[in-house]
Length: 198
Image (cartoon, rainbow, N blue to C red; front, side):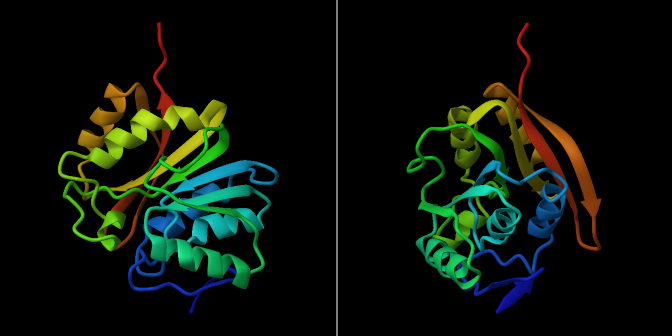
């Protein structure tokens, strides 16, 4: 059983574990600085659900999604275990999410350019050509309103410039809002913003 700030979670081996990696907790720490009470939040690829559960406990109306049915099963169990209500959707990116604007969109994406060979590998690999990011940037606009804050974390070991280029092609700019290094790697949090048009 994994515990973090009063939240208790069972996490199966098929799901990205927030205790073993730096990115989830760093993104959550940044998110906790923002006003969450009564704000709508969409987490794409919620995995263990730590970010979604924490945001919901802080008063956000959370929709947590994941492609992995095992992650969804444990998200449901962990939300009940902690007495936290949130909307949980099994979805391959946006496929099963109804169109609506959210106040916050949070993404800890698969950022290595390789085709996932199993459901668990969807947490790590975005496809040989970055198909995940192609679909992300193509569909993201359906879930934004004028004041939406969209946050995404990337590590220094992934092809950040390639991802930034894909965002630009789709009309977005990745604006660095926070960077932190531990003994192993640096992680960068970006706000995904629509490019200003002349």
